[in-house]
Amino acid sequence: MTVTTDVRLIEIPKICDSRGNLSVIERDTIPFVSKRVYYLYDVPSGSERGGHAHKVQQELLVALSGSFDVILNDGAATRKVTLNKPNIGLLIPMGIWRELENFSSGSVCLVLASDEFDEGDYIRDYQDFKLFKD
Image 1 (cartoon, rainbow, N blue to C red):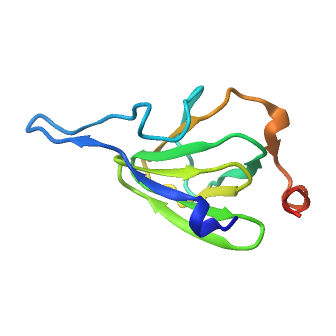
Image 2: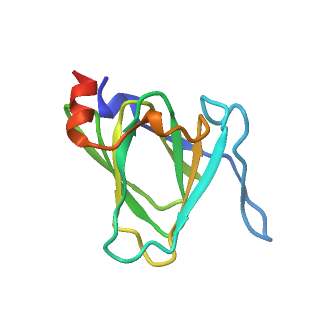
Image 3: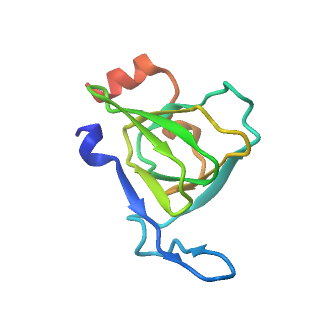
């Protein structure tokens, strides 16, 4: 598994209209059924979020407003992805360490998760993550 092949950007369908754009995430947009939706907002300047991996859960991250960087690590390689368009999502499969940083003022990060919250699915220590990947 490499960061470059398993993590991918997904274009979310966009319907353009003179009254404004509308994007829709339906069953065939992402490779999992979303069982949890949450969003990050009012992130103070210089703050970081994430700092974990999931054993099983997959996630789709979308910058609904503003921008932020997602630093991804598969245990061997690191990749940075900047999200700044509300019709582009970042699919993060299980077993990928992620850190979110460089939030612009007013940014909103939407997360669609494949599972409900389960603390046992989180790997919150990077050394434990490295052991999980070995």
